[in-house]
Length: 218
Length: 218
DNA sequence: CGATAATTTGACCGATTGGTAAACATTACA
DNA sequence: TGTAATGTTTACCAATCGGTCAAATTATCG
Image (cartoon, rainbow over all chains, first blue to last red):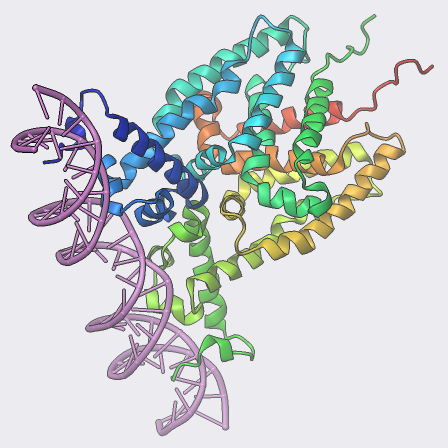
């Protein structure tokens, strides 16, 4: 007799680890493109190469699968912001934040789209995480940025909107990849577009945040 | 006997205009949140306040509804970029481009999300429009920006990634509205967040694109 | 090996999906 | 006003949806 998943409090077997990994990988494929409502268990089962009841043996509902996927991905996804260091040099910190986020957009576009889909739908499954851990992390980093501005290391600016703008510009290359490719055309849409983007964004943010000479000051 | 929609080549009646308007309005509500796959005709029918077969009298398939909606919205959505004027002053042109896009994010968030959803899913229904009219428009405006840079009116930069970055930062406030609100918290998430965003983005892009003194030059 | 627990599957369920058929209601217009 | 065209609805369809069940298969371990 199969033990219902909910009762499995003990150590997970090798098979469990492998299969759950396999399922979440397939789920990422599907959910990241079609969102929660637009995705079906059958699709995920087919991508995962196993039968639908077999999926449901590991995750009892579609929602449980989605939840597990979000939980697993959220931590990694916030890594670049978490790496933001108050002790470091503002310019190089911002630079490497941009670089890291762009690398994620390049290497983990599905993860980015998963969240984008979730946000578009009003974050029905992650609103708590947004208002809790995410907000706290952003608040913390906003303080860092504010302190830099106060110390005259960067221009005065709203730290929240600065973070938003770095998030949006970098994630754009994952979430709107089709559009970026279409607009750049075949000749410029190669792998180099991430390097071009990095160059542009670093220039924009570094120069845009340089301290401006106060008119009238010596 | 009802004439099938496809055969309706003549002028549209008043009722047709009203009902199609009503349907597309409801469709925008639904599609913009759930995407194409995640939306159902029943949902749209309920929002529109009419029966499902009645919807299908005006739009024979779910796809036809979606297509009509995209067509109608695409033109308006590109207005800010189209308004970009080569003759104008670079600084004020960029400023008003940002402002216009932010106003669209504030006043027409559903339209923004509709496109975002479509992009996330790989633009299966609009790839032609992207590679055609959109690319041409962006190419044209990119030339303008490049000319400005060449004339020394703004800093040298990749015009495509500049446009991408303005698109992404502004649309962020529509597409990721939940996240923005959650992070800003109740106190700062009021209507003022668009003004704050405008201030920040204008500062960022204007200062970031100021011509830099060439080291070594007189 | 044997037996017990863990895993996998085909068949199936009721609900929902996109869409149809045809009867019914309303409108436009001669 | 009459009537033909237009508009609307109820009832329905096959396919697909999320999910269950019990039987069959496989892994684990003494």
